[in-house]
Amino acid sequence: MSTKIEKFEDLIAWQKARKLTVRIYETTGGGSFARDFNLKDQIRRASVSVMPNIAEGFQRNSAADFHRFLVMAKGSCAELRNQLYIALDVAHIPGDEFNSLMREAIEVARIIGGLRAAVQRRRAKPESAS
Image (cartoon, rainbow, N blue to C red):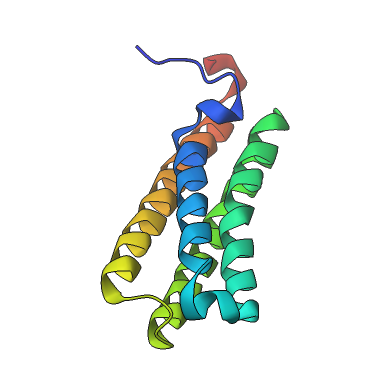
């Protein structure tokens, strides 16, 4: 039995992206990270962009639009992961924090990818099969 998703807040991808964004803000708010304004800003923007892309795509009530916005959300996850490598390389975060955040970012991307694939299958399904 599947539950019908009626609002973007019900999407697991959005919920997990929200938690990841909070962690990114916590991680970037202190120490040397807080003083690296450019990287802090970039990593926060990448993280923050995942949630609204999921929300906006869902709210448009079009499978094609939702798919397009999920592609953008997954791209933002990749950008976030890239910024995490930079933060590790310049010693703004310790290895254990990097690993934990990276696992979360990969999980969010994986969930978005699964959702994107499901939306793509729905788009490809003939209207008469609905």
